[in-house]
Image (cartoon, rainbow, N blue to C red; front, side, top):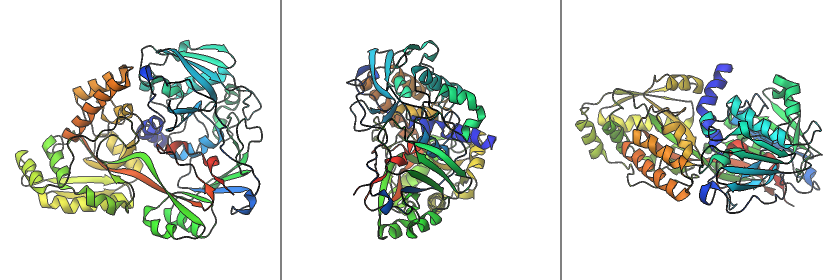
Length: 534
């Protein structure tokens, strides 16, 4: 388990946490106005009438596609744990694409920027942790420092935050500075993935906190965990914000996609998360339910190992890309879900542009590029993929198409942990994996020479320089110039091939209110936002 979690943290850490970045408006990364008042964290309504519309009285049952193994907000690695952590804990702010400053206040009632290297956090007063202690600035500073020290967030992205010299001005005010101006550093503090935890509760429970999280401020309290089946939460009656509509929240772990679809068909769940796209037709025709298609920040990429004997040649990567007909392949593989990708940056990234170079099928150009590279007679390739229908379909289509280039593609289906082991050990040629982010800086992890998730083993000195220039400027417009040049280089050199912008399929009972954020941070899924509107 430890090896698995270490690999997950390496491979998913940047994705899950840079997903929480938003582009702050204004110069110096500051919002146009200080953070304002929040209307309430839970987003729920009156509990009246709730019992008559759910599968169990006064209970919201949500089928999720994975089971986490910890409630420790300083130790979780991916989506599995994120589902659990987010019901009990809260951040300083939520990513909010509708807000002028990119965030909506939660535990930080407001914030201000005395200068471009300082942020003053004004905390909400009267917020109680679930252990009965009031949240204070000392708890916030403890949470930020522990998050950094425990490695949940990539430490490289925290180096500019001077947490060691942060000042607790009073119980509800915290001052934090950066070493240098930056276009995004303070957004790490407001990240949805940085939970605020009671220092006292965490110290008292130690490792036991993972299964007995009583130091959060969230709207639900953990009451039961049946491994392999479900976790049950009870509404926190001392919650500071708007109460959830339902007294009980149950997350059922239904890993198999077909089984999740059946749970909806049988009426046993109120919400089903991330259903198989192949079941779109079936789910759309069910009485009493409605389908919600939700664009995510994720991108499905074909990863080329740029250290490989053949793939290190730009012309070979270009040839393989020109041979593919993604406009036909993607709708087939993903059952008409999502869209064909046109840039390495994802659809939710504010710095995304459509580069001049787009790879559309051109077999003549592909053959010429291979001939120029000295591979007119072809060669053997191997792709390693997980047992996901979309990836198997894409791989089979690649095999058939590339055969026209005299390339023999071997397809091997492996567990994700094995794939990650091979990728990190530079022992692969091709794979398909999804990553993404809400800010151009997210792709440093994947595309910088020293990126912790540089699966493609890509190295370009100019790209490295552009990442540094973009993050060091406090002018968003100037940063956009650097990110634009960067994306054009990616398109020309195609170290990885973006294929599909991800979209997931959620199902809810008709009459339910289900909040869909256009930027969709799936790692911060807050199921207590789902309620029944009479």
